[in-house]
Amino acid sequence: MTIAAIALCVVLGLLAIFQLALIAGAPLGHFAWGGADRVLPASKRIGSVVSIVLYAAFAWIFLMKAGLVAAVLPELAVDIAAWVIFAYFGLGIVMNAMSRSKPERSTMTPVAAVLFVLSFFVALG
Image (cartoon, rainbow, N blue to C red; front, side, top):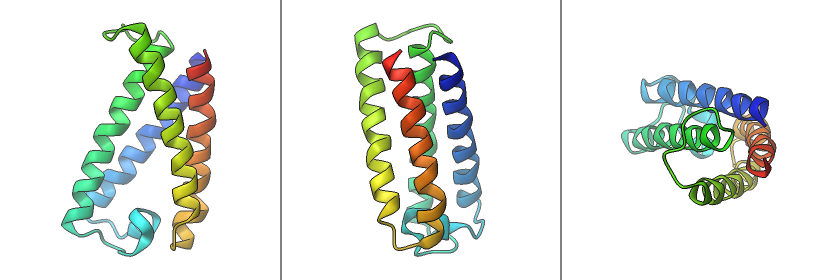
């Protein structure tokens, strides 16, 4: 479970770096948010900021679940949150697979699948 939690956090960290690049105006929008914009407009950049905050919260939950950081939430809350995030990653597989953007489908669908599998092992732990 420890290795899965650390790997999950590494993937989330890489996604956060990607989102920061999108916020900064990098022409990588075809990999995110449906792929319609090469450079994200302001509204989608706000979505990227929200994504980074969510990634941090997800990482914190899974690190607590794995016992790698002090639990500041009740164990039951951490357990429920871990399973909810696991389901969210499952939805991410479906949504990315349905993207009109081929680069997003071919890149982000496997990333979502990796997060799904890693989160399963941590949530199960």
